[in-house]
Amino acid sequence: MEKELHLKLTVRLYSDDNQRCFGPGIATLLHQVDECRSLRSAAASMGMAYSKAWRIIRTAESVFGCKLLSSTIGGSHGGGAVLTEEATALLAAYDRYCADVEAYSLAKFREIFGPLSPQQDA
Image (tube, rainbow, N blue to C red; front, side, top):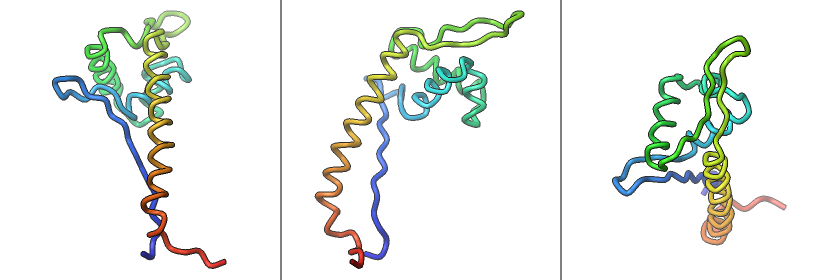
């Protein structure tokens, strides 16, 4: 084998009716909202339409049965959005799960595919 192999995993959560409700895209969006304090700014930083950002937030909210964002409308100090406690807990659980899956999968990947990787000259 001439090229080195690497592993790329994504974790996506689905509802019981097979509706995609949480994954790397919404996780990144929520992290960006936490950083930017604005859904519009978070979406823009990802090259995502604001309407799409709201759509995926609403889909997740309907599946999980809770609000993920607490938003304020414009005014003299401008509007913004912050994560709810539920969103913070969901995001932390998702990140922790992804890290655990990644660590396990990387170890198994090296165990199984390591012998197939090109040998480095010493």
